[in-house]
Image (tube, rainbow, N blue to C red; front, side):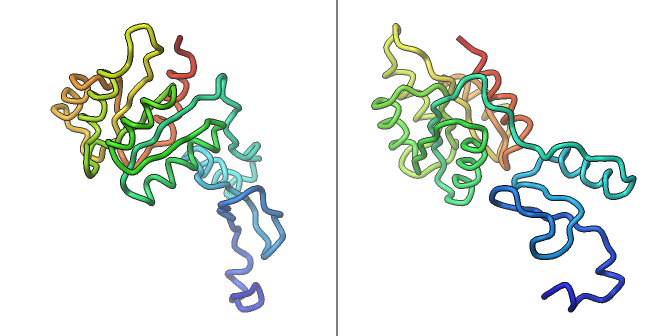
Length: 193
């Protein structure tokens, strides 16, 4: 549907272009008032809406700052869509990401490469995140750097969190991922020893 196909009242409405890739020209396909890059944070959307309704400039587009330290991250997630979203979020923030589909592959990858952060889904085929965390911790020599291990879970129950801590996990993130909490975890790991 082109601009001319829209009713005149709709053509006058302000628009927000929600873009997957890099910055898009604001007037490329149809007049837009704001451009947001995916994934946009709630604060980005709020700033765009404030700008559209009040005329107050929304400020620059949300582009994550370069990390204080580029992290090498292992992501173990069996759901292809969740894995893709997490990979893109992490790469957009300037980090190096390896991803695998199950806990067994995570243990093998952690044995072969030094990671700063390991994100483990707790429910995966072949080997779940808790068992993978125990194996990774058990295989890490005492004098080697200890990677931060975070659980990824849609079930953020206190019993699951306690089980994760017993398995050697350092923290957890609820799914779907909250971008602000992910950024907080990345800062914590980046600022660590």
